[in-house]
Amino acid sequence: MPHNFKRFNLKTKTLRRDKIDIITLGCSKNLVDSEVLRTQLKHNQLNVNHSEGNSDANIIVINTCGFIDLAKEESINTILEYAEKREKGEIDKLYVMGCLSQRYKDDLEKEIPAVDAYFGTRDMKKILARFKVDYKHELVGERLISTPQQFAYLKIAEGCNRTCAFCAIPLMRGKHTSRTIESLIQEAKNLAKQGVKEIILISQELTYYGLDVYKRRALADLVYALNEVDGIEWIRLHYCYPSKFPLELLDAIKDCDKVCKYLDVPFQHGSNSVLERMHRQVTREEQEVLIQHIREKLPQAALRTTMIVGFPGETEEEFEELCDFVRKSNFDRLGVFTYSHEEDTTAYQLEDNIPTEVKQQRAQKLMEIQQEISYAKNSLKVGHTYKVLIDREENGYYIGRTEFDSPEVDNEVLISIEDCYLRVGDFAPIKIVDATEFDLYGVLDKSVN
Image 1 (cartoon, rainbow, N blue to C red):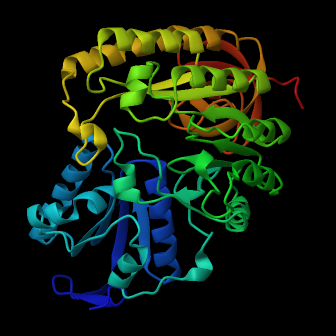
Image 2 (image 1 turned 180 degrees about the vertical axis):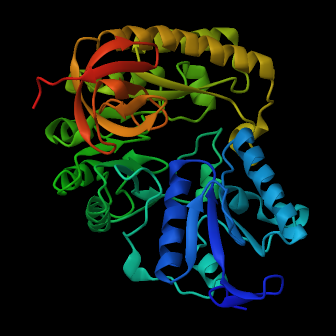
C-alpha cells in the first residue's frame, strides 16, 4: 500500500494519514541530507517532521552516523530501540539511511531484520521510491531547515578524495563531488528568503572544492559570489584541509565583509612522525607556515582546529610534540578526539596499542592546555563590544555568538534577560563584561545604534 494513502486503523475505526518522523544522528552534513529528504517528502504532500524521536509518527526514518565508535553505538542503539517498536506494532515502518547504513548494510540486514529497508548516503531517490513518490529536481537548492531560523548549513560538496589513515568517510561518502557555484548561490538565496542570516559552508573538505567541476580550487570564487547574496549577513567556513591550502582564500575572507573572520582547519597532530603515519600529506613545519599566513593576513580571525590523541604507536615524546604545537600555535578553539580503530581504514592495519585510559588522559591534558589559552583569549575581549547573533533563550539568559564562534562547538555569549529585551534571530551590539574559559558574559551596549 502506498504510504501517502490514508490507512484504516482497526482499533479506532477511523481513517488516518501516515505520519513520518526523520531522526538525525551525527554531523551537520547528515542534518542537511535529512532536511533535503523532508523537503522532498513535504512537497509530495506527505506528513513529515524532523525531530529527536519524541513524536507520534507511525513511520520512522533514522539517518545514522558511522564515523567513530561512539557515534556508531548511538546509531545502533537508536535502530534497536525502534526495531523493537516495529516488532511490537507500535510503528508501522522503519527505514535506516546514512553513513552507518552505507558502511555496514549487509551486517545490519542480518543482525536487525526488523528494519524494513536500509539505504546508503546517496540513495535519496531509492528512499523516495519507498514512499511511492518521485524525486523533484525542481527542488534542488530548496530545503526546509531544522536549525534555528537564523542560521543554516550549506553543503557545497559530497564525499572526499583524501586518504587519511584514520578516516572512514570516503568509505561512506564516496569520492569528492562539488556542486556548481550557480546552484549554491540559488540555495543561499532561498535560505535568505526563509530568514536565514548566517550560512555555514560545510563538506568533508572545503578547500578541495571545484577541482572536479572547474579543474581548479574554486572556494575563493564561491566565497566572493556568496558575499553578494542579499539577506545573508554572515558566511562561515568549516573543515579547511591544511595540505595545499589555497592562500587566495585568505584574501577572499579579508575582502568580503560578510565572511566571518573564522577558519576551521583540522590539523590533527603536531608530530611529523604521527602526521606521516596518519597520511596527512603535510608536515608540522608546513602547518606552522600556514598558521603564520592566516595570522598575518587575518590578525583578528579565530582559528579553530581538532586534534587526535592515541593514534597507533603515539609515544609520549610524540604526544609532547603535539602539546608543544598546541601551546605555540595559540589556537582560539580546539576540539580533541581519542583515536577510534576503524575497519577498512589504512590505520586498521596498525596495532591499536594505546590503552583507552591513556588516550583519555592525553585528551584531558590537551584540553587543560587549551583551557588556559582560551581563558587568556576570552579575557582580552572584556570591555569590548561585538556584533552578536542571538540564538536562543535559556535559563534566564539570551544566548548568542560573535562572528568568531560557530554554533554548538564554540563559545557562547550570555546576556541576562532581566537587563534588556532582545529578539532571537536578531543581531545586537554586546559589550563583554566577564569571561570564562569557554563562555563570555555581556550587556547590551546602548551607545551603539
